[in-house]
Image (cartoon, rainbow, N blue to C red; front, side, top):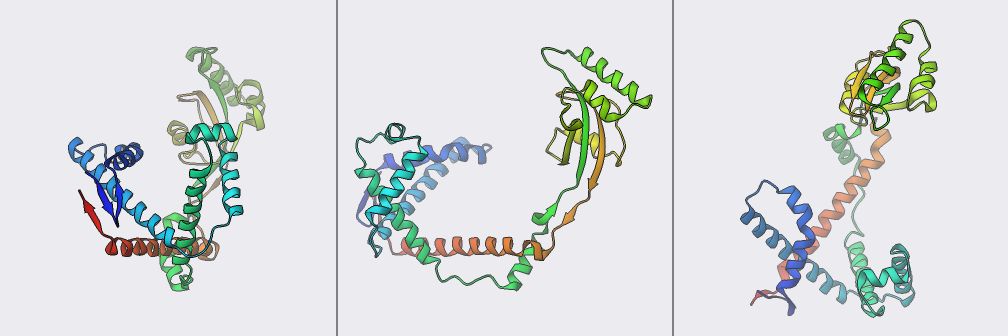
Length: 285
């Protein structure tokens, strides 16, 4: 199948290439879908992506205004720098000279300018819109419970088996029961003695689940018993705790305004592309 978009031919190979580009993310998102249906959907999305890209590029080529050689050369130099130099750049793009790359850069600059103009006259978000977003999305502005924790840890690895690691940790635990200072025992026994074993404030999910299950159930100043994680044996001490806190509207209103503006830009861009699509002549041969 060949598509003709406003007189421009799109080969089936271009759609197949787009499908392969999308495939990794698509497979993860729709892994439970029927294989035949999944492949048909992927090809359909790829076809739509290619049509959209062609329409955008066609419109950008007609867009008023010149792109200077200085802009193109500057963008090309930055691209080469990002790829580690001239040789790596040419190897990546498989080009002998810069002519085609410069043409692509000029087109991309035109596309960016076109969409900047599409979004140029968008109004600033109203205070009521900011407040509404805040009320409907408070979970985004909620800081999780945190604890400041230190630990004595004895790793289980090629140097130390489980029995030896537990025995060392048990000795540390016995000394704690006899009144030894936790921080002194960190230096004496722990495989991670830096900063007295202090990990700072942590949120749930930063450490492994077995660690969280213990430390988030300790009071400030409390020392745990010996417990096991996939890394080895631990004894933990909690130094501080920060409760769940919802950030105030005043603190986050600029973030919200920027998010609303982003959504407004996306809507304006989508509507612009829909207009291009509604006027386009698309044929299949």
